Image (cartoon, rainbow, N blue to C red; front, side, top):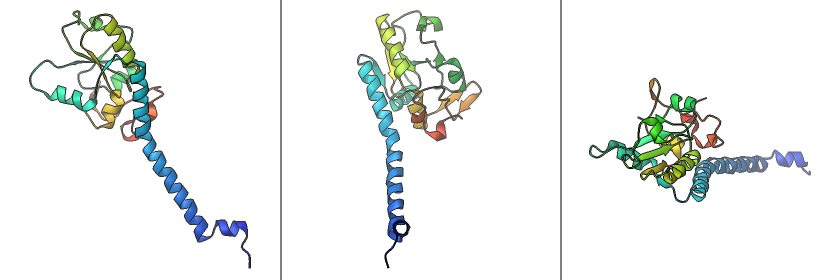
Length: 182
């Protein structure tokens, strides 16, 4: 007796093939996130090759040092996103401003770490500050998304926070769901 095509599809072998294709698809989807984040960071680095970068663990280590001056972290995301959550002690600045607007008049007196969602706007700000003569400017590589994805501390206007507002960032999917505000 010959099985119909539908009968072959729902045979134990056919079902196992569906399960296998599904498992491969899920594995590829899960591995795609980190790859996309690195690709986004590479594109930003290529666009701004002269901008100094600092990764999240290195910035955390700098914060934790007992001696020496601490960096001034400047968040250039929209104010609502900054107020929802930001790096500890970060100050908000519009991308069109300079640190002078925050009370830092000298261009040699402080080390600045510019932060945004993933580094694109922060790199543009850092490049322009470099052209204005600011000597110690770096970008948080991967921005607050990578900082939060690594489980590092963030704070909001009401104290500690555990989520980040992805806002309208085209990179919102790079922020882990567990760290993403609804």
